[in-house]
Length: 168
Image 1 (cartoon, rainbow, N blue to C red):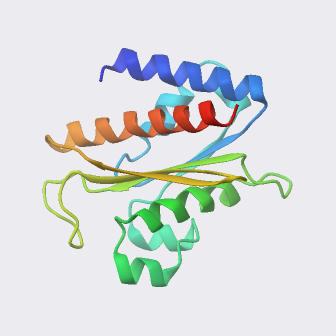
Image 2 (cartoon, one colour):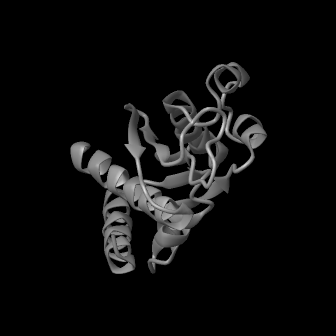
Image 3 (cartoon, one colour):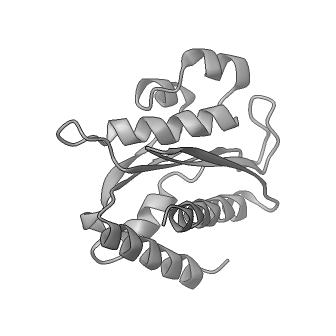
C-alpha cells in the first residue's frame, strides 16, 4: 500500500463517480479524515464529493450520523452495525436540497495502541451505503497505529471501488 497507489485509486474513483453523475459523502472515525483527504486531493473531486464527518468521539456517531444509541450501547463503537449506520447517516447528513448523497462511505475501528470497548487493536469495519443497500466489510489489520490507519483508509477506497464496479 503506497501513497501513489492510494492516489491512483482515488483518481479512478473520482473519475468513475463523475462519469456516473453520483455524489459521495464520507464518515470517518479511526481514519480521522484521511479517506476524504485522499479523495479531495484529486482535481475535480468537488464535482462529486459533498463532504465528510469525522466522528471520532462515539457520541458524535449518534448525534451527527444517526447511529442508534441502542446499537452503540449494546455493541460499542466498533461494530458492523455502527459502520453501516454511519455510512447511511452520512448520506443524509450531506443532503443538498433534500437529496441525500448517492453514496456514503464509513470507517470505524481501533488503531491502537490499546483496545477500545472490548474491540482489539486492528479491528476495523468499513461500509458503503447507497439506495440499493449497504455493504460492510470486517478487517483485522496488524502494525502500529499509523500503519493500521493507512490500511483502513486504503481498504475504504478499495471497498468503494468494489461497490461501484458491482453497480455497473
